[in-house]
Image (cartoon, rainbow, N blue to C red; front, side, top):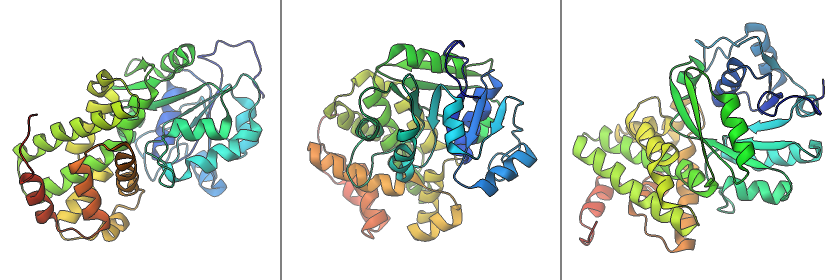
Amino acid sequence: MSHRTGEPAQRAPIAVLGAGSWGSALAIQFARAGRRTLLWGRDPAHLATLAAERRNTRYLPDAPFPDGLILEPDLTRAVDAALDILIAVPSHAFRGTLERLQPLLRPGQRVAWATKGFELASGRLPHEVAREVLGTGVPVAVLSGPTFASEVGRGLPTAMTVASADEPFAAALAVSISGKNFRGYTSPDIVGVEVGGAVKNVLAIGAGIADGMGFGANTRIALVTRGLAEMTRLGVALGARPETFMGLAALGDLVLTCTDDQSRNRRLGLAIAGGRTPEQAQRDIGQVVEGVAAARAVRLVAARMAVEMPIADAVHRVLHEGLDVRTAVTELMTRTLKPE
């Protein structure tokens, strides 16, 4: 059932690569909005279970699959059937997924991703990794914003950003994912949207630690606000537009992950404040906690760009250098005073 021509771009089939909680939720939403959707994952047994149960029972038990969602265990068939390909894998698997995808692409196909975070080894943003692997001839886009997979899966009202330098591609994706309870906004600022998605996970761990230590609402909002300033400084240094950081993919996603216990990053911070080590906390959560690796990558990029990010740096030191959380707070509060 290869897709070649004839259908409007926003209604042509889309293949979602990654059958975890986020990939499943996005596939559900595309299918719910009327787009034929193929969902592929690297584990055929897992896909067989999803196909039999018509839902992702482990992560999204309250989100049955729409009729338009097809489970496809063969990557080649999934890619061949689609016009657009959406990658929804953790950041550590992003390059490898692109490398598997690249030889399967044909002219005219477009690639998007919902992966967040800098590449740890290189400090590159996802769109830089994609350009390196796919070249410059493939239209690319990123989907990001304040979205928990369980709420998207259940069809609760949600908004997110689709960013691309290719305006028709961004618009087509936004139209095809939108419905009565889901709204897609477009942006040309792929750098800003990706920086927001990368840094917010690190700051959410810090917010979880602060709340777990009982530091109160004043501390939480100070962390969110000053964290936003750090995020913005880094993004602008990398070429982003300052106004992007007041939108869904930066401020929106930051507030969401810092304040709601559905956030794995926030829960990890709470667990550390309760006496668990970062390793123990990750085992307890049982899913990838993106902020742990992101803390290393953000520190690397901030140093390269000579951008001061004291909150993100403190979170890195707690996670990876054994810094005591109370010492981290004392150091942050006794830094030299300066204008806001």
